[in-house]
Length: 397
Ligand SMILES: Cc1ncc(COP(=O)(O)O)c(C=O)c1O
Image (cartoon, rainbow, N blue to C red; front, side, top):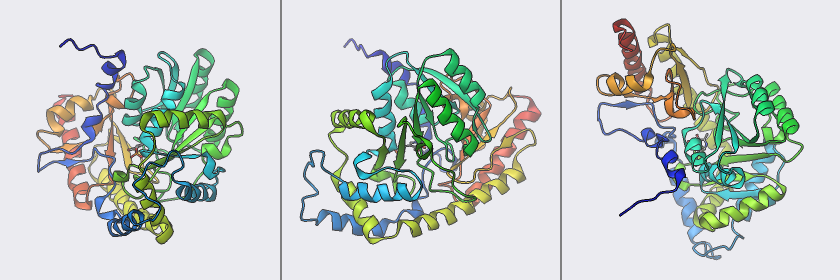
């Protein structure tokens, strides 16, 4: 059979997204997945909430024809309002994880060849979603306080850009938080050059140190920020429940696109999470998560200090799931992963290649501490450190 796939397929198949799933090697210590710690899922509470949901007299098993979820949207609106983001239940749409929000927003604005700014490096799944719309990517380098706005400004002056995608809180993959000054400047630049911003915030409530900064959405006065949130990292990813908040025609058009994509988000899951939030305290659950992930993050930093060779730098994230290592320019960590991290040292990370749209950056890697145990953090980082020093000594990079 002659297979004539659309041009978008050739890009999506190169995303490298499958690399984040676990390895079959029993000796492997994998720092690849952005997976939550499974021991922290509120399983009993969710089972109880599911029972409540499925016993609901208004059949949770029926199509809701767009009318689903008002109770849950009210609760999300109040969580967002308490976090400083002004919105209301009418401007919140439930999605199948934040991932669907990424797809819908790209579908809304990106025609083939349109300018799309992403942080470099960025979330691998966002590139996988965006690739299907064949954008013209402009990657802006990440600094310790968020994206380089001088680079961004130059791009906005020289190119035509429709959308800026950013993860301001505990960025995936670097763990970096965008400073308040940069948040304000980013909004000012978007206003000046008339560009939409997609603010992806799934890790925002997983802060282990310091105080939260205002969301981009809360600083936006021109309805140009679309914000995504998710229950994946704070309750469980298998719920496949996220949300999107925007306003005006952007919001109504997104609702139309959502209906075309999947009619509606699972009402059963919506009712389950609604029951959970009615009966249990999300705040105490978040406190438990923060406490546990803080310990892992600290263990990761201790292991990095103990085992990383001097020529490798790493970020110290204040929240989220990731630290980012940077090796000297001549290191190709993708190649090293294939040649030595995986087969000889039984350790895996996400090398930077697939986290940049041009796939030209080889010397960085995302190291996730969320789903590994404290002893795996210690032994895995020791292996990684040994492997990096070993390759350096042999000059085999
Ligand atoms: C930055 C970012 N956005 C979106 C997602 C997708 O999450 P969800 O499970 O809510 O679809 C992830 C998942 O890792 C992520 O890290």
